[in-house]
Image (tube, rainbow, N blue to C red; front, side, top):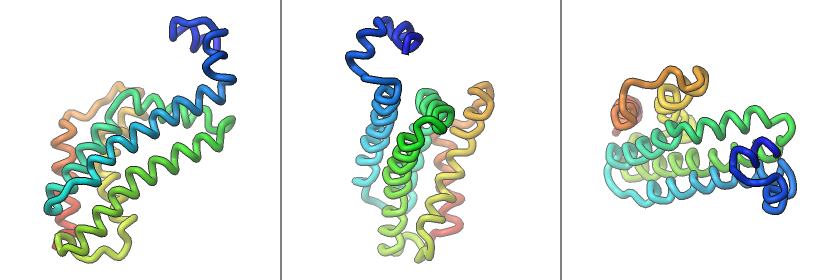
Length: 172
């Protein structure tokens, strides 16, 4: 808590007034990141249009979120602190799965019903395919390399290629 207070330019006493413990502070950081998930996905759920338009909106939002260095730092924090704060880490995981995975599964189901995509037997698997094509270059590579290796394509280019590949597999 001392180093956090020092980095924040506050006293440890002030930090303890706001957060009763390191666990409470950790919860607040994770909750804030989870709320950012929810805000970004609210706009994506409202998109109406064909498969390419809808999926591109999702892919660009997801890529921008996962490509954010602050978000990678949150993931690193969650992974490092998971042994001590398992419940918080699992809540973080569930929130992401609900906000991103749930949103995309809903979009895939809607697009399948409208005929823009073929009927998808396992929408969650299909969602994982699209998300994985985005995550690898914009999140996983920088996460593993400590942000020393970055994708050379823009988020829009990554999203467009992922959506084209997805539509080639699942398009009507």
